[in-house]
Length: 556
Image 1 (cartoon, one colour):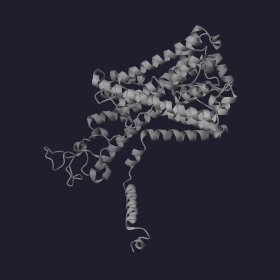
Image 2: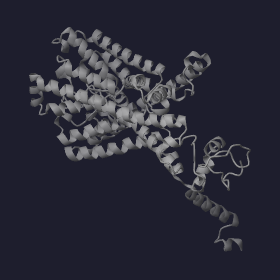
Image 3: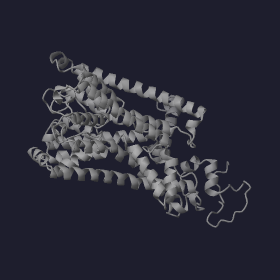
Image 4: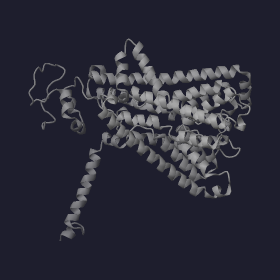
């Protein structure tokens, strides 16, 4: 009888079905924007942004250049990930395609993408205050500490874009003036069907964002005996990536010293740099980043000079030119990927050194991001306290091991897949070597873009690979671009509500969502609306804040 009544199912089966339906309805009923944002953390949003725009950029390049989609996708991904590998010759690209590559390079640049959380957090605080109070001015509602952070975010949003525009404008101006005034350079650019303005603009943007692209098929090899252009490009490369955190710290320190209006804001930025921005570090870490930049550059330049001084390709170069090209190439190898040397002709040991430098390019900043995100709030004298320093050192060592293990696994898996697919080419062509494949993978994962090339082709070595291998390289570029990101728990990328508001209207919680009410702690509650009615308190004289007749959390 029971089976007939429930359509052939037992009573307990029907109860389970009904409970399942109730759970599903509860899920959709309670689903909110907060739960959605908890799923879409910073890393996932960042990865989705790069994936989507890589596909869009690849489709646009494919349509303009009439090439294969996989080549357009790889080149666009390389541009967005500021890598520098390409399977479509940039020197023969149409102007529209070069503009697309320039835009992709800007959209994927480290400084641009790291500034987005600053703007989002600033707008979030304004939105939160406007939503929960009748006053749209955060200065009248936030406590002193939250007010400083709010203005610090606004200050960063002015300083960073100003820095980007000023540095690149100066670089473009210098190159435009030089290429226009120097007769031989002007004639050379005309022979390559490019103007001095576009050459200067494209190469400054590419160098500053560390993409390493060039409108010349031989990159900067032609300028080995003309130091001005390579030096300007090298300075742009340093200021746009590895030297950016120290320079930003110097700018904030200078503003604090000479500013008479916003001195407290600049002091807050220097005392709590990682609360506001991912690439602004405490002084100890800033010095360490600067030391790594100088030491890594010198090591590469010295070894290049030592083992390639008598390189046949250097016969026409003077001693000063050799020092210049060694320095420029050492700067480019860390992140940029343009070349002033023919990489395939340098000493094998130097090639291995270049591969190692490409692999560890992101480590100094990435480790500083992880280390500074776990520092306690009062970290001024952490390095003078042995117990805190030991805990920090243990954490950094653990993260370093995780970095190395993860990177090694990615590189091995990519090499394994590509060697499986390209096995016939490896067997049939003596110059299609596994070392070239390893170098290309490391270059892609390090988002550098150097390549050992293929014979006389101006394209990267991966241009000779099959479709699946190119897809693997695209994935390696995406993974490599995201290995230096801050964790989602990093304070600089979290959307946190201000801990305390000085005044809140009496009817605030009548409009508040239930989840918001439950998410408030006792301390935050007391700081926001005063003490609950059933707790003893004195001097309730504020006309702006009124005690509630119906307390939404009677369980307090």
